[in-house]
Image (cartoon, rainbow over all chains, first blue to last red; front, side):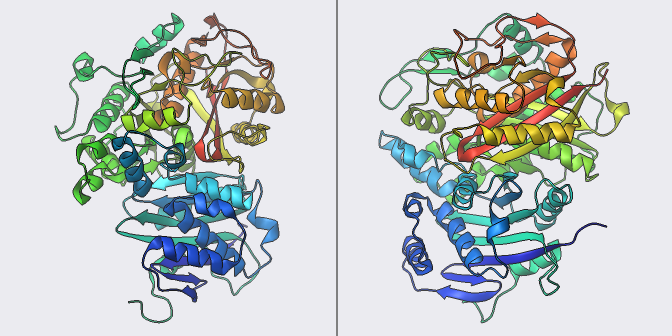
Length: 215
Length: 368
């Protein structure tokens, strides 16, 4: 019999609101993403100076992971890190925000290694791996839209094949036009109250409006 | 690809000097396609005139692969997978303040869709952008999707260009070699960039394989160092983990591997890390080679390009020399291939590592 996999926790960041397991946990007026991200980071009370070096895409994904794990329903320690945990993420515009920044630097005649390193989408995965000690399967996909059935089928295959026991999955997009983060942590659990890890449940968590109406 | 293979056997390098390319006026040593490269193709380039240079290179590569098989690339049972780091990023330099339309045109989903459409394929193409392991990662992904029965055939194309966007960034990292790079050599001091597109067409239909020595994509795995964004692991343990898992997935053991097509970028730390990983994996006596001195580091294309060359090595029982190699480095115990060799080959291992800490390993098996 195949193990059934559960969504052990999820986090969604819509504009200035952070939801964990569909509950609003942080809402802050901010004039821009940078201010929102800094406030949300300080609100977590973690000491991780690397945060300030990250590009906006990485900050967004980092915050989603921090908030998800700080509101974890089970003890996270055993499964979040290590060789049997994976990260499979996607977005449409790759690292576009930083790409444009690097292009501006070129125009000014000097490229910056601190900017250039963030011109790859999987740097976000690298940041999460460094923060959480994750060493298993990791791939960044680029797609026009969040292909939830495709991602869910692939991650379920990795779990069934026992290449990993747990996985962060989701969609993290940052462009000047807006940002959106959805991150879920999935793995085996006997907790019946937890939602099953299926494309239907991920679809609901990704698309439905949470709690009060969103403006 | 046969021409590439022959040039490699003859120890030739496509890396040349391009003067006054960098922002400070210094030279770039790289392997680039000629400006009029489509005129050298033995076939007419397919696709609309609106394709970007990146898309054209990818399309040409797929056409060349398609000519070797009867597999229907337009079939709904065929999936296209594009592996690239930066795609048509050179478009950003076209406008001082890139418009929304230009950004959409330059985005990877647009390129992937146009490439797949050129071959009449209507499935949503997949795009893997996992730094320098993208190509290898895409083959591993394709193998898994075919094993799961999601598709019958997969077209995996890896492509990247040597654009100012990319070479100015690598230059700022002081990662580029002045002159031709020297993989796995004591005096290595940086990499050469290269531009390329390479394609593998995978199938689960044995009858569709024309070769008398077909290659099985036996197994692969991806890991992460969880250590540093732009420098490899100090220990090589995470690449070793990828190798161990790839061998397990392939159903074989380290002792059976006849040759390793390494990442071998010729940066100080990459080659050292690989040497450590091979030793940890029980592969310290296995011959290793790198084609980076001949073809440059082709970034997202590298995993596919080098996998194709490894497959040709296995099929022709020929080991390729490491173009640019000078003298042994102490951290690598493996024998480094320096001259072409002929011997029976069954299992080949391809490795790759990239920014973001990612590592990939892929095992090929020659079946007959």
